[in-house]
Image (cartoon, rainbow, N blue to C red):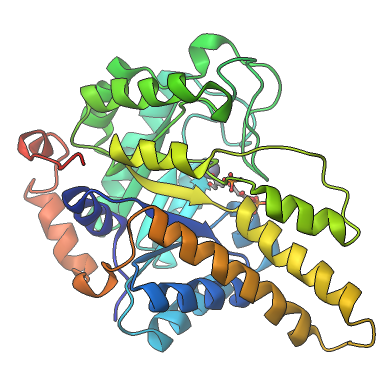
Length: 353
Ligand code: G3H
Ligand code: 13P
Ligand code: ZN
């Protein structure tokens, strides 16, 4: 099956009222674990690669080759290949030319991926990149607002991407009025929003509701959506890890977000924890073992359990085989004739379960 675009996938998810987990991958085994889980519960898949992975770990060619191989191995299970957090035109253009079916132009940060950017910068950089993406039929996710705690102003750095230091309150949550203008001007297919952390559960949902009220037709994306499960923290620490006690976004809070219009749920940390925790346990319990496959297989098993749970809890299970990918050239035509203009979507009702 050819790769599916984010736009097609999230439009379908919006019609049906569910959320699609978007898993970061850096290596083949993570892709295999996710696809095994997806096949078992018939879920559509978003595989995404960070700039760090694309530039300095696996490389673009390797990620694209892995995802295309997975698409051939799992021909009934639709996969979207997404570039996570591009912060400049070049990173997005290279992902389009490497045949990602979706890119993220995160103009909420400057090209260094650290310094928070103005609204004007975000619009000015995202709009032309969206135009180029759409010429090729590629989907684009934009971001408005900066990830971080609404309570403390602490920024929300995630791996290689995220503002550093303390942020002003007005930089943090996505402004619902700006969201409407941003979507109208840039024409992005999906919007990553900043809505605080798990600490302010009610604030968190109200923020999503307010944004959705202004842009009911845009597909909302939640970054930083790992739940950092206690059992995985315990697993890591029981076998020699020293992970300080911490918390993520509870699965229940994400389920509430999905009821309020979140359609893409970004998860990286939880998969890293599952894989490394199980590998630590394997190493401790099998001191004579030295075949890396055995270590990694134990990690894949733990990831499989986690990923299945997220497909099921976020409602994606049971939908994979209902999706038949629309080719990029047809998507390009639909953008060109205005069918996919987000403002047209204003007329479309979205089920809010
Ligand atoms: O962007 C979010 C990911 O967690 C990126 O992590 O840059 O370490 O691959 P990474
Ligand atoms: P986590 O670090 O919470 O898994 O978030 C990942 C993410 O948002 C990738 O873009
Ligand atoms: Zn992110």
